[in-house]
Image 1 (tube, rainbow, N blue to C red):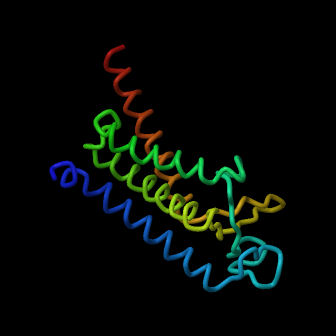
Image 2 (image 1 turned 45 degrees about the horizontal axis):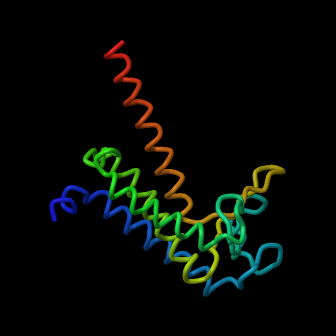
Length: 167
């Protein structure tokens, strides 16, 4: 029980990202037909910049490893278990690390749920920057990216401070 009470930030953020992800995906499933990307059934939020679509991704980021959804799901489960097994090494007692891993683990859990429930991950946030069409993504992907980036920044800054003190 002490592990849970010491990791409240991580657990609350994990559940918040997971539920927000699943709620938005459920809304997309009920609102926009599957496979809507190039047709009039998409929701244009900002013309020529931001749309809401309904596509499925059987791979990872940018559709890498397409068709390997169950393997990616198992890797996600392994990543989740690893976070909790290696909690001391990851310094999860630090609130900023709990924040980072709360975002990331909530996203991982959201995408794992899709992989095993649907066989693909629902992506729906679709952005275009000038002539570049960014790959569609979802709330879970955002949590993973922001969480990993935050942890990397914090880790590099911590290592930099340690090096300056010893050097």
